[in-house]
Length: 143
Image (cartoon, rainbow, N blue to C red; front, side, top):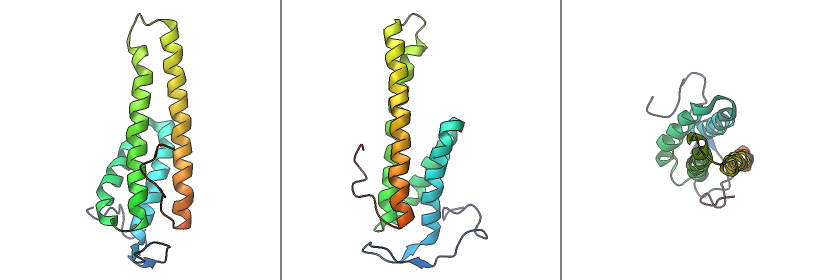
């Protein structure tokens, strides 16, 4: 659907939430989507490519949540995906070569582990303020 809701019968209507944001009329459907993206990202740890669904949802909903605290969450989620994707890709690179030295393989594996830990940290760091109805203070940060 165009409004970021998979099933309108199971989601709240567009009632408003009171937050510490400058714009108090936050659509609850976007709050639900932001929670869903964090959940999908957490599922990525087990299911891999499922995070693409969360990435697409964040890209679709970010402009619609402009001016609200949710915009910072969608920006944070998009950055989390791309930075972790790049980090894991660099970590996997040595494994693509059949003659990579053991040192490169160990460094690649270590990089992958570090980015998985970083990814988990970002999910937790973003989900807690979302649950409280707060914005991410600096969504463009790395930590």
